[in-house]
Structures are given as C-alpha cells and as structure tokens.
Length: 83
Image (tube, rainbow, N blue to C red; front, top):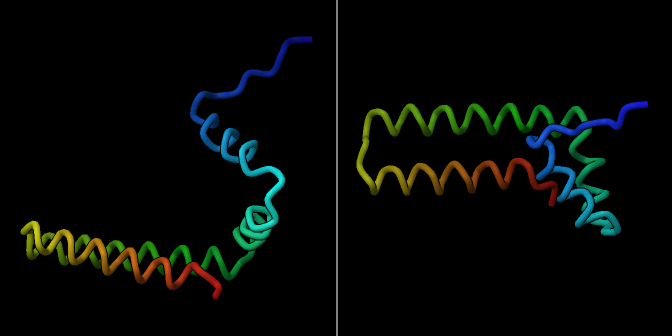
C-alpha cells in the first residue's frame, strides 16, 4: 500500500491545526467557521473588499490605500467576530 502524499499547499493549514490542537477557542472557531451565517459574513466581507478596491482605483494615493485598507479590515473584523 502506497503512502499518502500531501500537497505542500496544505502544509500551513496542517501546521496551524497541529499547533492549536488542544485550544478550546480554536475548536470554537472551527465550529463557527462551518456555519452558514459565517459563510454569508465572508461573502459580505468580500463585497467590502471589492468596494475598497474600486475606491482605490478612483483614488490611488498612499493615503487612500492605507485608509481604505484599514477601514475594510476593521469592517471585516467586526462582521466576522461574533462578540
């Protein structure tokens, strides 16, 4: 029987799973990530980033990049974090 090979692209996820294996908060995150509401919130976050990218095309300065990037990140964190 041949040994099963794992793609190098999956190593970071497997390493993170191994590193956080006994943590209750990581288990809760994995359970929350599998819900339909979390996936809907991920879609909302994608729309937020697309709007930020569109605004960045209009205003391409460094200040705009930092402002839109930070605002989009803050909004996505607030949408994806349950508390």
